[in-house]
Figure 1 (tube, rainbow, N blue to C red):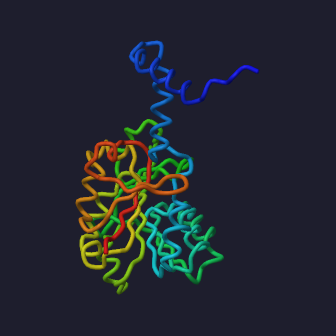
Figure 2: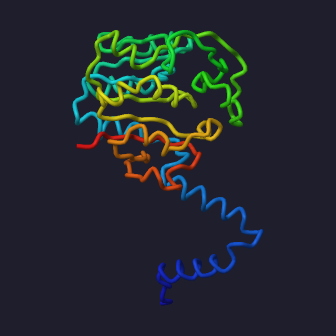
Figure 3: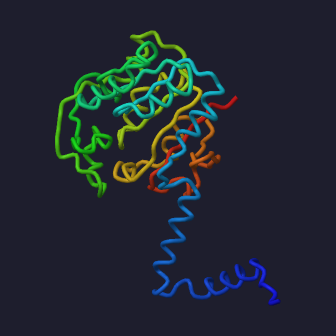
Length: 265
């Protein structure tokens, strides 16, 4: 009977060959494949972003009482919060059509969810919302993000915007467990209008999406981490999370991912 070659020897042989030949032009496709596989393992560009893991395995055991969903779209994230926890949810969605769907989709939990047809930013007033009716999830107050190849957003609408500080003050909100921010490149303005909330109320968790949009806004993950100096940074994986150093270039790649800032003890 022929003796099989140990897998470790095959792997070592391949690695030796690859290291020797990796710069050859005909290996470009393999290099791209390996790069994309490594990015996925690191937490980037996954279809399953890790949000479900975070809500059910990290947030739910902490028994949250109030969560803010900023950029709620039609309510997928809010629904997961409502179904997985007993929290109250305030969901902000400035696009009228998406807000109507948000209200419909969360109607069964109407006693625990309040759907606001407004955006969160650094001013109280009205701003121009750029959107594509066929891809409402990509709507943004930032016109620069139209530079992202898959973003159309050629339609416009005027939408009400309030600052996080003024909203929480007006509604006497003094304790927040989670603020989720998915505003398609408008995250900086959310933080600017919420300085008091983040420094005084100090939510236990802050989740935000990081993607190409930030490249066109000239923002890094480290820029946001510096706004939350007392928080540890975790990158969500499909079935877990990993702590990251926001000063590490590998934590600042302009690829789709979700990061969670966790208030330290």
